[in-house]
Image 1: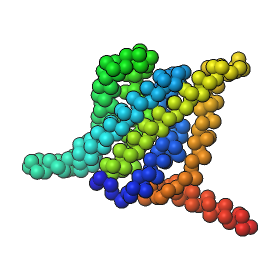
Image 2: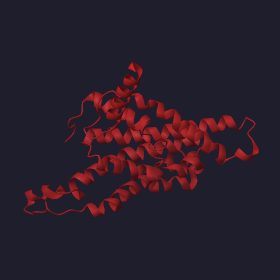
Image 3: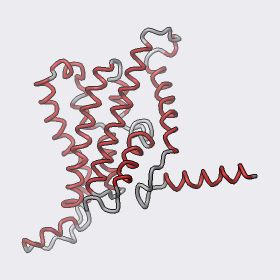
Length: 240
């Protein structure tokens, strides 16, 4: 239940896949709103990225507990010890509501902490800090982890690496946008136009990590299989 069939090498491969190969922002394009709005300055982008990383990791952990002990199929079987036979109750229809509630609770706590200890960052983020609650990247990572049925430790590795990948992406584009302020940009590409182009180029660059396959991440993961098939086909063409 903690590790399942995963080894340490599997966890490393899962972290690399979540952070680079299937980057939650550059591969799935989740969380684009705050990514585009808060990436003008590197300091602000890094603060938001750290906040998203913390919320995504902690809410991913708690939502795993919610799925396995409350909303999942047969999750309520632990109530048998109290004499209540609830193993046949399926509360999966409540998962969206509970997941978002968990995320919202963490965001509220984080907002209080940032306002207390980093007021400048709190003012810079403005309305985008409470909007982390509806950041689809956080909910998406929790749902991906649920659908893929990761054990506890791989689940934490996955959501944490996904948050780290989102942080990395927004920090990179913020650094690029800061450099572009000193460059001569064509009038038609000012603002979001050039940002979208740079985001596309970053996504293409991250696709270069697809060839990294440390080990099979899970039995249902298709990436190592696709890589192996592609390598076999390339070797076949080389022989021809």
